[in-house]
Length: 415
Ligand SMILES: [Zn+2]
Image 1 (cartoon, rainbow, N blue to C red):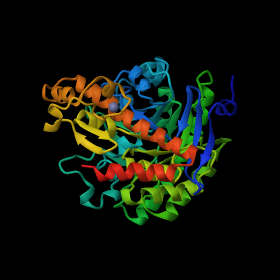
Image 2: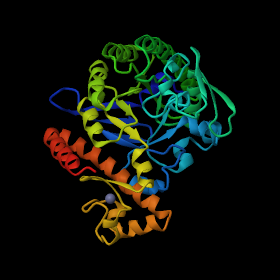
Image 3: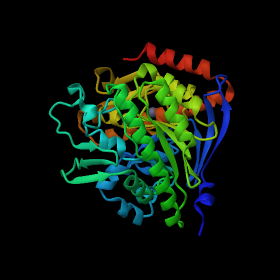
């Protein structure tokens, strides 16, 4: 039987080139299912599928890894079934590395509010402004875990750090995240402090359970576990959370990497990343949860984030919105109707090398399903390639000029 310590050695991070600021860097995450060259954009496959795209085409568009959602797969088809299938990669027919999130964000975001502005407990719901109108509260937090109702059928469930670890071990992704509490920017300072204490206590419980499950499932590949740094917009809380997680250890089990989570305002995204990454060790990877806008990617990479995930490229694709170096546009506009050039001239994706704007415009008007596939391939390729190009610019020492050129053009024509 392989000891957890031996197994943990199969997961590692090798830092590469650095930016002059000492924070931004390239590198390689080594996982049992292959390497991820960083910075890297991780494609989201919430329900063990990148919506409308074959796994073969996900690989062809350059995605290095796929992130699935623990909460959704727990509800349907069930983590035990995915375990039986050999883990989420084998189940969905994806050969490369996989990530799962802890389910915390999805469970807790049912508390009130959505996206990055959230509140998850009765204390956090002091302000009516954070409660989405017309929504019943579906989740309640206590110090031990979260009670919630399924969005599918209203059935009652409970997640704790131990439950999240068990589900994520059954899903079998190469990288998983500790169960944490997200707060909103509207929560008081006192609430943020109490929440951070709770998240830290949960972080230790996750490490303990992760070690136990690693030992119990000795025949399975090692799964890297990332601690999630919270602390909202408070510098001292973010720095403390990062230091505490970097030093967290239970029976020799430490975190393999870190996630930067919770409420972020666009304006201070780079600042918060910098606070956190100045505290985190250089020899472990850092994942910024849920971002994809080009400005945000540049800001996060410059301040030391290595990987990113977001549903936005595929979600906007299904709404007919296309990303290009000249900004975003809707394919369902009149200038597209007789435009026989590519969605983005010069793009190397399948869609742009085989089809025209006029054809995509036609698919939109005819409500054809192929639109989803072709648009998603392009948008995901756009994000994957952008982050690959940023990595290249770090390695060749051209980051600043690449960023200024890219964002100058992107913003000038952004609609
Ligand atoms: Zn394209």
